Image 1 (cartoon, rainbow, N blue to C red):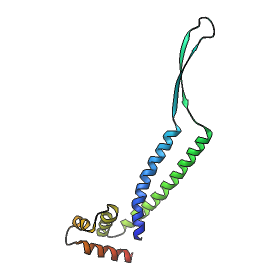
Image 2: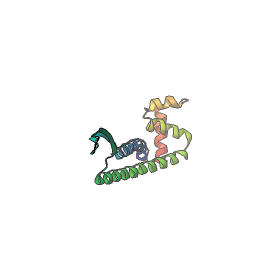
Image 3: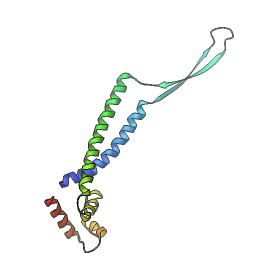
Image 4: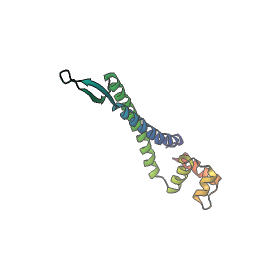
Length: 140
């Protein structure tokens, strides 16, 4: 696993969240209910004025196809991002716990090397963590 894939993990997580929001918006646009009121009267005696409420879903065939295609594309994008996310998480489960913490703090949370060393505690310094990370990535 190279460092770029680990950085892509962050983007994949955000892309999943954003895509889910986009899919929700598309689904809301599909089911827009329109309402209106009309007035009319009885055509025969007694001529009584009446009000009628009309409602329905406004949907044009070309709009429906476009929305379905948009939703399909977004669903595929989300599936690709989820696949990358799962690959990284599976890989992370097989590496030493210390390195998992270093990667999580430094890459996923965006902490500096100094902040990462403080979170890990013990004899860790920013330079020692940086070297440890570089050696690990070079060997894996």
